[in-house]
Length: 505
Image (tube, rainbow, N blue to C red):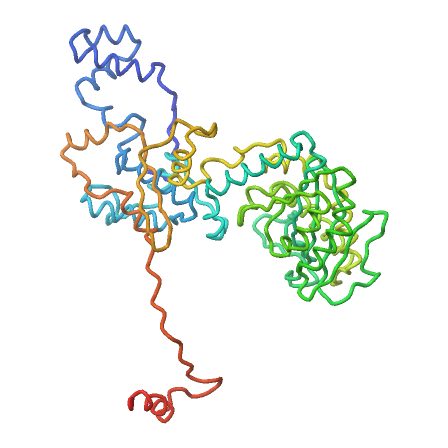
């Protein structure tokens, strides 16, 4: 059969499946004849007859021939794959086919697979039946996954709510701020271009694209923007590096050895730019990450003097809670990339000067829409306050259940907590692999028994859990220097002199 065959005349039946089941039960119980049931429920006579006589239609509830695996087995596999992908341990197509082949071999199932290994056609049908797809995963460090803990996230929201109520800022978005840094490259990389289909495309740049400059932004929940801070790599700041004052007045500039933020630079920025930008009204609330340069004693003392409250975000949670990360930086960097494309098109081979860098940053930040900034605070649950912005599926199922049991009186509790979850915990690595079972009912298992097909003794859950079982870390032994540099370390005299002291002890 052709691979992409589409059945002609795929019209759905005019009767309901529930009525078909009811008609079959009436006929099997002797309450109706097949003819009577056909006219009563408006179902073809042949359909009821074949089902009552168990000639066809009893193996599966959908159209087409019987699948190689039962519906229950496929549901179990699909649920496990979805859970592994959710927690960052998704399997490739090759690994999935290997798992299915091993399952078929262990359970001694009779399948149409060649040599017991499913092919591309089966995999394509499996994806379609369970709404799955092949995609490139986004790299997320383990610390971020681990930090997505309900005890950490909801404790932050509790502190935020108490602070907003204590400062009476629940309805004052102009006094709630978010500060964050991001790096900007001097070469474009995001903007797409129009070209010939099927032909390679390239873009001429002035550098390899590895040079980045740190920029610090500050914005309020009302959409107000404070002057940004640009940190160049160097020792001194020169007047030629500054942007024109009419683009975005009050911009700050600094230089550090590596072009990164340090404690002294942040303190000066806080004194000279942040505090004046907040205005005379007090109190003020600033939310930012806990980078070591942001939480020095000098910053804390200065904030207390100015009646400014600082809330530090939990570590590795900025992708979920930081307003500028959630909404603002993407639109800013898209506009930034377009400016670089246009400039380099008229300045082929030239490196972007620092004064143009400052000007483009000023223009990009000036053009940033207030609605985008406001939406970032909304997505972060800061204003308006919303402690349910983090989806439940982001949390570990077992951790979420423990948190809900511990806080049973909390309004966040959802009574529909799934109970059938299989866990495999490795205490050495403090990791938990979770495979969620499917609740779907299946009539196919009974039919396999009736057809004398082999019953399964191995589950997909156990096979998938083996894919994420943690290995014990290797034993560390003391290091021994063999040579200080370029040297023949396998010379007999060399090895003999190294081993003699050990042998003579």
